[in-house]
Image (cartoon, rainbow, N blue to C red; front, side, top):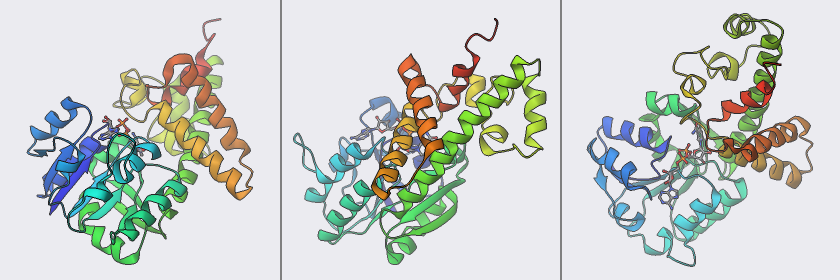
Length: 300
Ligand code: NAD
């Protein structure tokens, strides 16, 4: 298939690479030139801008930071027209970014008005899952769109769920990431408490992994440096899932709670912790660096 891929960051680059490996023709675009060059070296075609990248595409995939970027790409901004105003043909549109359900519905309805099929398809599994092609896709949109997307999503993921109508993928993803934020901060808190009381973090992790405290943040994405080879914590929290993106997702959970008059006390606490951590200068570090908040004064 001819696929256009927009947004080649920590997640988008390995996802686009897996599409190339599966034999698809991929044309890429990112605002960062080096990101385009890295994919070109792997056999992708270069788009000079989003408009040229999508020319002749049967499928368009976007993997952008937030809702504002997705809206600007498809609907346009003061500076530039959106893809929906300039597209030829009727490619399937798959947005894999994590954005608000409201933004997804807004863009999805604008797509329908143009006779286009739009899916919100946020992912779970982190950079490791993106590289391994084992992401979980959580898809909102029509049944026919979901079926049409299968060959493309299967090249990048392992578990592909149809959550419901457009926007539902984002609702499920936001619930998941609120829980992840709670689990990561709770894991960091427990590890710091144990270490401050003389435990070796690796021994403590192993014990909790096999006990009732075991969870994905502890078992797969351990926040303590050196406990897990290959983890973001073991490479100075570089790359991975940025703290600022977790702050964004916990903010989306908060908005969703306000709109539905739900109470999210644990999610609110996690949002405040990650926002504080970001304000202290850690926004561009992996979110597991929240561990540092609990390590202050460790040597006292
Ligand atoms: P990132 O910041 O590493 O990458 C985003 C990329 O989009 C950057 O390369 C940026 O230059 C590019 N970009 C921004 N605006 C653009 C535009 N108008 N046109 C073209 N390119 C543009 O972010 P990421 O970690 O890859 O995350 C992308 C999305 O996936 C986010 O919504 C995030 O919440 C979600 N997500 C991330 C992870 C993770 O572990 N990193 C996991 C699941 C979901």
